[in-house]
Amino acid sequence: MIETERLWLRNWTPADCEPFIRHTNTPGVMQWLGGVRSPDFLRDRILDRFIPWQETLGHTFWAVERKADTELLGFCGLKIADDPGSPVEGELEIGWRLREDAWGQGYAREAAAASLDFAFTTLGAAQVVALTVEGNSPSWGLMKRLGMTRRPDLDYQGPDWAEGIVIVYLIRREEWRS
Image 1 (cartoon, helix red, strand yellow):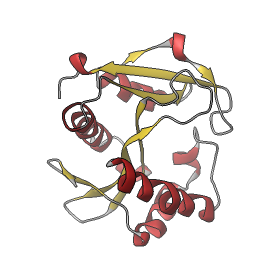
Image 2 (cartoon, one colour):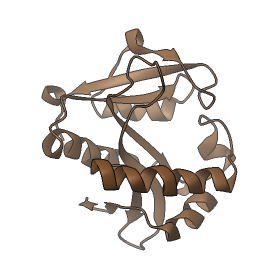
Image 3 (cartoon, one colour):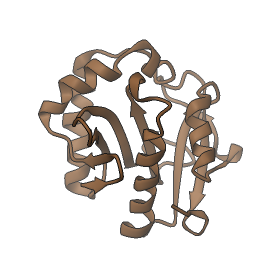
Image 4 (cartoon, one colour):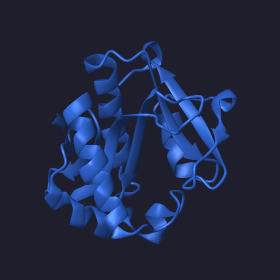
């Protein structure tokens, strides 16, 4: 578990599926992620991807829990970029998804900074990428605030969730300052 001032980034449990789906499978949250998905699709992401990644890789898109009230806010963390044939396939990727009532309060930045610290200090990563789409200005705005740099040379035609071009941001270990 990673602890920040206001958050815990922790491993998933099956009990997290229902609140995660209820709070994040909304038109607002899913606007840039292919739209609202079936509950089974999202449950499978947690059970078949997020939990096994933690067990096999030692990192995942962790559940983000607010300390003050133990509410599940969404996820933030690290995975291996896996869009087949993309220029960043195999790179360490940071990602986040928080429920709407947690937006604008600095939780995503706090969780992302802790995830980058983990990537560079614990995992010894040389660099980390982040992926989004051009229209998702809150997401790429956070990437910029974290010190990440837009890399248009790495942009690529995305999978179905992207509905177009995936844009890539990158930060190297020597550029990171928590």
